Length: 313
Ligand SMILES: NC(=O)c1ccc[n+]([C@@H]2O[C@H](COP(=O)([O-])OP(=O)(O)OC[C@H]3O[C@@H](n4cnc5c(N)ncnc54)[C@H](O)[C@@H]3O)[C@@H](O)[C@H]2O)c1
Image (tube, rainbow, N blue to C red; front, side, top):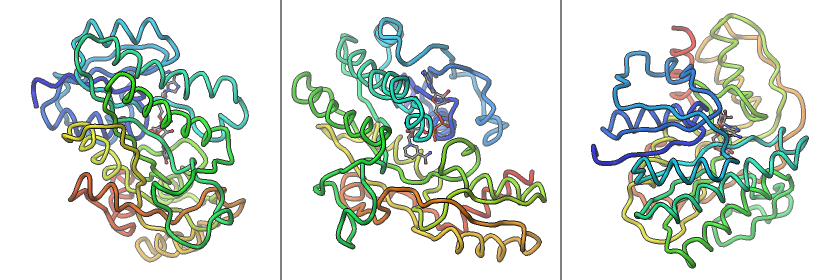
């Protein structure tokens, strides 16, 4: 894979760190684009990884001219676009959230369009394109169902999916989007649905913690999610593809029970309170598995063990 030069936006984030790790391990050259380059999460998950093929560019995803020149002048062949602000930020700051999440994504596609070479894009949409469970009959949702987002964040993500389709039809830019639900695992410490990972972090420290979200969530182990973004980036598939992602749906109370089974000393230290996430949680991932067979799906109990092992280290 050495001839691949991959730009990873939002590489300092949770998914970005795992994507960067997997790309470097696969032999790609990686340029990160983010507000910072402290590598904290990469250091957490891969302290011994060789960083010889890793370069950093600092910048804002809203900066159209910067992204265009970076993609054109650095010989980028692939982009994994993850830079974004998450649901609570977008609810509180819709204008700024829109500039980052919507204009930022248009910048990535326009930079690919004007690169003067074929550039493939793999990018993060979100299950937040789906509205609350009660808007749908009680069945799994596939990509033919209508997204009915109920948050600014979900509306922005849905807009990006539509823009990707227009860039394919108008400019022939192929892209691959995933709609993660709740990503968890080492490094997932920001956003509303960081609660399961924050709980594991506190268990590792011997502290108590109250999860501020309740009800069922679809938990997706971050290493699996990163592997799907990377596989989608290099898959030989033409078109603007948007895929649901499904992990394991678990009620947060059952999550706590499972953690207590795995680490009995955590008994009584975790509590669950607060609202449910207003997003349907029964996802059909047939399309993804048809496009890219054989993707990993770590059972939640294993994901909990692996996450604790990293935080206890
Ligand atoms: N974590 C989840 O459960 C989840 C679920 C669905 C979708 N997603 C999507 O996956 C992607 C990655 O999520 P994550 O959990 O790794 O998030 P994260 O918050 O850990 O990482 C996002 C990164 O984007 C960077 N960023 C933010 N604003 C920027 C700007 N203006 N310019 C440049 N960089 C900027 C941040 O510095 C950060 O490093 C996002 O697009 C997110 O919407 C995540």
